[in-house]
Amino acid sequence: MNAQELIATAAAMVGTDKGLLAMDESTATCNKRFAALGIAQTEEMRRAYRDMIVTAPGLGRSIGGAILADETIRQRTLAGVPFAQALAGAGIIPGIKVDAGAKELAGHPGEKITEGLDGLRERLAEYRGLGARFAKWRAVITIGDAIPGRACIAANAHALARYAALCQEAGIVPIVEPEVLMDGAHTLARCAVVTEETLHAVFAQLNKQGVLLEGMVLKPNMVLSALDCAQQGGVDEVADATLRVLRRCVPGAVPAIAFLSGGQSAGLASARLNAMHVRAGSSLPWQLTFSFARAIQQPALELWRGDSANVGAAQQALSHRAACNAAARQGQYAEAMERQGR
Ligand code: 13P
Image (tube, rainbow, N blue to C red):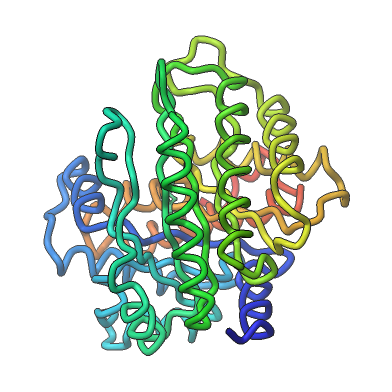
């Protein structure tokens, strides 16, 4: 493991004013989002869509790293440049999603375990050769009446730590993503309890596996009321609850925390991240930023709709959302920004 390289990459991914763009939807998920808008679900369409994203002018001002899907890292842009190379040329570090998806956890109805450890060492070596300097593995924790159980949290924490150790061995910075889903009707308080338990388990396993905390990035959920909960937490309530949990669980040695958006609206995701910075001031031990997919891409996808005539408008929307989030991660986002630059 080259610790200095890992530390330098982790720092460069988020800088002090940037975040990450997740554009690593699996083929199935990407197709689902295309289908909802009547876009053809083909490899060429996925390539054209991702070309629109990586060629958006000025994206590198707000985005320090982009997470690619396996299909994309093997493709070329419409101009014939490998996607990883196109990103690097735009000042954006290329990353790769390496998990094989969340599957049913045997014996635990309604709960999931993320697979993909078999053969991961070899795949990481290949991805590094293709230009990836960081990776992502997403674990999914579902809240329900009697879940999550200890088995689900323990199994996912263990897999995340095994993945992270393999990444660091390969000179690749692991993004460790334990996502507590916002589906359901649970309260913000319940989300806080489950997120705290999950993060404690994850850091215990990272410690056991000898993962270098200085050379990783944590990608957690914000602490939120579930989508169907009648009592929705306000922006400041979400910010305070999220900061409380993170301060309790995440060692100061971790250089960066980059949130997933998880189904929040684009505007709320920005407002909540901003509120965390406004309320914490300069007191945070880690960079606190974003690693959004939907909360950056969705407005652009809705404008693009698979038509090359819409590329310019879609790119403007994409860059605008990225800029809103880059402002939010410095506590400088204001709702008025939503009316500018679109
Ligand atoms: P969302 O921001 O759409 O939740 O996606 C982030 C991500 O990468 C999930 O793994």
